[in-house]
Length: 277
Ligand code: C2E
Ligand code: CA
Ligand code: CA
Ligand code: CA
Image 1 (spheres, helix red, strand yellow):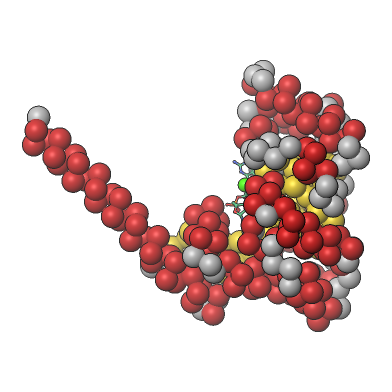
Image 2 (tube, protein in one colour; image 1 turned 90 degrees about the horizontal axis):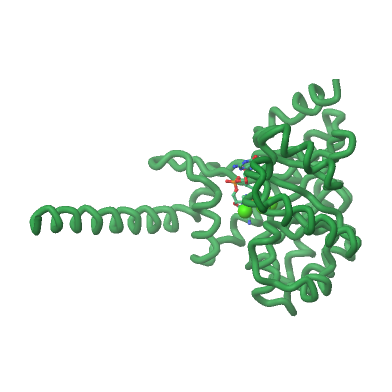
């Protein structure tokens, strides 16, 4: 028993080492990822709940690592933030998104895109001017971009975040509170922020149709959001039953695998054509 316990312990320790090595590798290679063209943006549509009209696409980042293959955003975005590299990814992302929007425009498709900002981005008071510069370079107006920022990112340094968000808002960009319901911020705090949308976290939406407490939470979130003059978005809509319930509850916008998985930039015009036709 002692021996098997030790073997077990060794395996466990190796697992941790391996994981640590993988993280170090990813952090080391993050800086090259941009230059080597290993990053890409994919786009997931957001629909108006009432009539299914396409509103915008959310831009999500993907990393194709040379040796480790596909790395999910959940794994490398956090590492980029902790290693102080997120600004590289954000800078690349804004440029890539605007270039795609301009290219679709040239093909006759007027597309709006929501981008995700990290905690570090939100306190970067130089970011609004940089975004405006990139939009300008591609001859795009500010209503083409909207922003998604998590509750916890906003609350890490609420004073600085307020300054950045107010500048972005004043420039004409709409702001959504992402992953709503997973943080600890009070509504009184959130109300000080210039936000227009609450995006209910998918953990409340994924099992919405199984008769549990999630429906109660979602119902009151939608009600409360509306009472504060905010639009409400549900992400993680995977079943027709959830979609119907969200419509009944008056949710404004829907997003999830039921409607579409994120699609590659090249597939966006065809997705729009098919959705409209
Ligand atoms: P998020 O902003 O909350 O994005 C939603 C995540 O849920 C995405 O994962 C999306 O692919 C996934 N998803 C969408 N619909 C469904 C569904 O119906 N069911 C399920 N189970 N999942 C669904 P993804 O692309 O892996 O992104 C994970 C997180 O990484 C994002 O969460 C966001 O916080 C972050 N992220 C992604 N791209 C960027 C980026 O360009 N910049 C920053 N700062 N963060 C990003
Ligand atoms: Ca998001
Ligand atoms: Ca989210
Ligand atoms: Ca999330």
